[in-house]
Image 1 (cartoon, protein in one colour):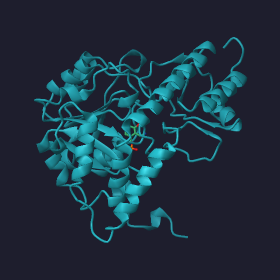
Image 2: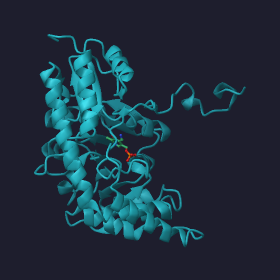
Image 3: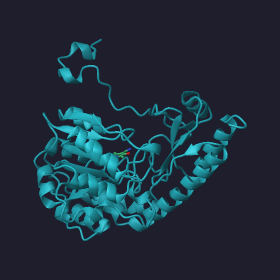
Image 4: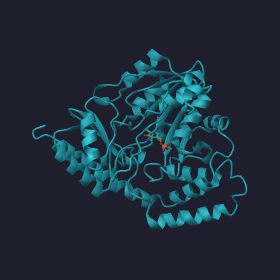
Length: 361
Ligand code: PMP
């Protein structure tokens, strides 16, 4: 049998492992921050009709500029954004990869603040961008002073800040992002994958876009729109920033089917946001349940929680799995991450946690 070692692999890829959240089939899957609520039937029917329509012309290449989709995304985002300020691709993973292909590269450096989304160093590696790690404050928080100090120390060309952060769920204040932008002359990407789960009154980094052409705010339909399987991520930035991403995308990277499906889901944004509200309630119920069992739960503005005070995370992870509940062990000492689910999934998780938590823990 041929192994990787037998192939003339690029030397810098030798020994690397592929992104690997375990894909196990268990009754309660709360490990990848998916939206556990299926797309409602009426929305599904509309999407199917639109996809059927798109299939009528699928012999032709799709609209390379996904004009209608950019208009719909700009309208959804609000903040007076113009379609020229919007970019989209197959998941925010691909959007962020475009950013690295355009603004990273040999001789350039990414600054990231672990623990954070594990793919950032991966986009850096595949675009030959060096990686510097910044430190966080207590309880995984980021203050303006810390971010500015880390930018001065590492002199990055690209800074990515997940706001709110994954895997901790913690918010990042706008003044921190403003200070980060002013502290260097590279590109600042604010990854707002979980924006819709923030408190309604919390301002988005989109409010910072005017006058900041080196800022990009990335979003995804994977979470709030329950669209992880459809693959649609997007960002908002200055039109010139978007032009830079055009230089690196593959032609026709967004299929006509993806564009039609995304337009269908966006047309039902209010229904989808009602699901978001339900998930937020389950998240808060989960946090309360965990706190009553004695765990320390980081404040969350997302659809997941990081809880600490776990004596043996690997053992608890296994115990939960044996009870049909899959959560995520990210090797953060004493902590596990759990995504918020439906009411029934939340019950199943909390029941399993009660059974697995030593009394008096
Ligand atoms: N950014 C963050 C912070 C995430 O947590 C995720 C997915 N877990 C992504 C980006 C990528 O999402 P997608 O490619 O599905 O849009």
